[in-house]
Amino acid sequence: MAPQHTPALPVLGSRKPSHRERVADALRAALIAGELLPGQVYSAPGLAARFGVSATPVREAMLDLAKEGLVDTVPNKGFRVTAVSEKQLDEYTHIRALIEIPTTAGLAATADPAALEALRPVAQEIVASAAAGDLIAYVEADLRFHLGLLALAGNDHLVDVVRDLRRRSRLYGLTALAEQGRLEASAEEHLEILEALLARDGDAVRAVMTRHLSHIRGLWASAP
Image 1 (tube, helix red, strand yellow):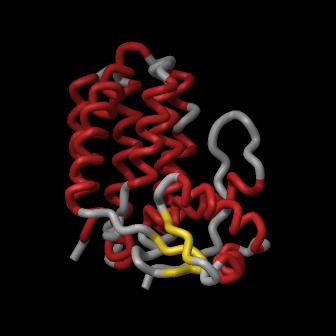
Image 2 (tube, rainbow, N blue to C red):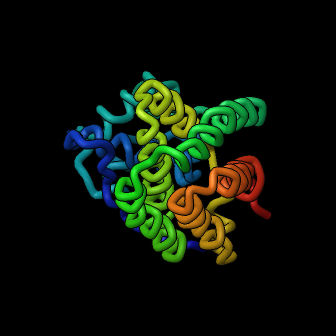
């Protein structure tokens, strides 16, 4: 079984997030990674103990996730994680591919090399999280990396759309990949993307991004 870690609460964006927002980000990452299972009811005190925080910000964060449709409120019990159908996952992945592949490939011609290099520590964090089997940290760093790349295109609305689609994704296969020692190979693709962008090779970026996103409905979705 991959080692379980109390996740470091993520920091996304330039504005320093509130504690409630940081808890919500960590919970979203746990949902995406399959650490919180569909149909399961979780109490705020139970999640607070798991994440090493107090129950109040967890309860507030779960209410935010309920507004996003990621969980349902169960009176006097807690919150139930909503299920995502295979059809929904296919649709999310299709939309993401339509947006992320050409936008990221286009950055090969426009992105400032210094801005790309600034994302290298995040790509290395993804690799380190994969090696440690820390799935929540992996998902959180993956989100920061890809949204950071897309932000270089200068379209805030595009970034918001992809952020929402990524939050709704489910990568249940990550646990099996981590246990089998295969997640690091997928993590290395983030460094491949950076190198192709720095080489100004749009075709190579497109090829790696296509392979990378194909894992969402393949290796990362339901690894054996």
